[in-house]
Image 1 (tube, rainbow, N blue to C red):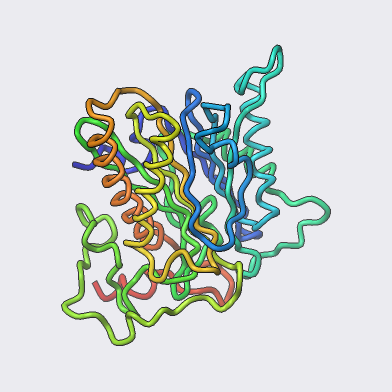
Image 2: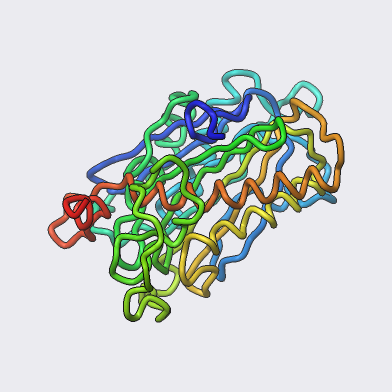
Length: 333
């Protein structure tokens, strides 16, 4: 069953906000937690760009994080976390060190610097301010497609974007968020069918299903030709109580969802990362079997979120911009 919104915010305690600059052709997505959440990360891409992710290792001291930031802008986009941190600090949030509080905000970035937008921003990049705006606008409803961190995202053959999905699993809620800027493709060859077609629910990305046969050349590993110009960023969340080691395993299992939705994936050209978060509302009855079920559901949700990102995207206004899935295939429906 799909929860009401079919978004990661169906997980209690998770809020999402987007901010973007259309002229810049880039943006930021902030995942804000109503209370500190247990988090971890799994990195599979060959060229990741991250901030404050070392503390997500199960051996590290900090147990709770206040937000996660996904941003365009390559390394410049790492500034977005400072904006989210500022918004949280104004509200007294953060890890307590005596009278001081330090908001814990891990983040990751994708490369969208050569997508046709105007990147002549002057001395300082705009991502800190975009991060603040994204955090300030965080709520349970948010847009998908060409918005937030997905505004400037592309795949090898279609416009990328921001996607989300959710599911119920043994009384728990699982959700996923994906900013899809993959080196590979999310559709089979040149056709409209998504690699994630077997996991689709209720026609959420067009209901095209699996093609009767794969289009010619569908298994040829076409990728963007530019090194370090790609990345898919993911966040999976659940309301189950997880420890940091369990959250790490949750992230590892969820990463499989990218392999179900993108071909090829985890290449040297990608910076693929998946964050995993527990808002800790309900304990697992069985730590082993329960976690296995949650991880399976999270992988499926992440695959669906990737497909929804591309399905909901719209093309950038630049004359040479990649077509969106809807531009190319919706008229054939």
